[in-house]
Image (tube, rainbow, N blue to C red; front, side):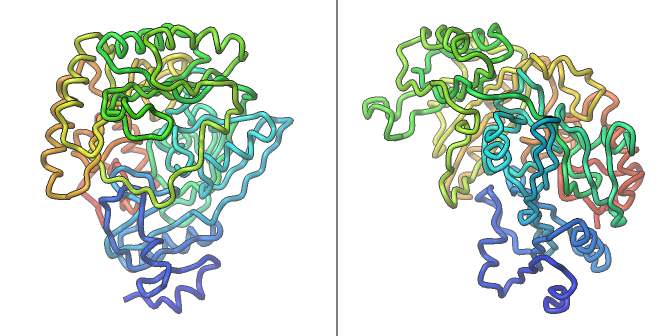
Length: 457
């Protein structure tokens, strides 16, 4: 049994126990299906607290969960009966507008960071959700609104401060611990707890961005993807095929009909952006057109408080979405009985593809399109049905690219985790894991265990 009063005296940050009034809220993560009850949640105040929390887990043998924003699809930000190392109170952000760099603590969300950097007309690319913690998304790679113009989040990572399994605070960059620096750029939380990250900032002032809703037909879907692939790299798109939800800005007669919802970001001259987006608008009469000149932080609007969807997901890469694939997507979305069935497509390339595949632990530089198949549900009894639907559609869309993006993996097989690290990437990561975490203390993640017998604590 943990002595909570004793723990409270040992940490600068707050220790939340099961009898704390805030416990129920504090234990929850974004994935609504996760219902785990940790022995304690430690909201660490600094790197010293982080080291103490790691030592506590090792001393007690309790499983350690590390949480930045809690958006892991597999719910890795909370442990049943274990210790949650919660970084949410570590939110310092130091911006150097002249050098165009930042030092950011990993309790910050992508939306908070983006809003602060946006005051200087600067940005670092993260994902497509403002409430995601910058720690988790960065260590996984980071595929978002600026991926074609400025690459992945890790492509702008200049250095990191990481607390290792033995409690040592390490600086990792191209010169100091370069093996660790390579590994944390795509290798997830396998190697330590990142407490501060140093990023490069880009000048991103006015953009053309927002949402574009088009009626979803095979020609529109295939045409959209083709236009996105042919567009200048200033344009990044995230397009989802779904049944139109009853959103107030959508005409009532469109509710329940198939639509393509596209988030589009043109990070360049506004006049050029309007010209580049015009062919997408010409694919069909838009159901709703919210594309306009805006500041980049406006791409992260306020999110619904307490939104915790229950989903089954499958992430993959494909080479193309032709008319046949578009027909399959439409047929399968229409057949799903999920609360919401979605097939999301992110066209890649551009700056992301110019980085050598072996330069970082994210090795999918040549992948052309990321596809995420998602089914949201209400009842746990329906999970097998929705899992079958997700896996079935993913199987039908599968092409020659066998990779997977670690940041979107659910609680899946070891084979799927290995698919995130193709070629020699897995073996290289495992060797680095053995160097920095030989006992696999950090295993509540998409785990790359050290070579040898399994060492889950």
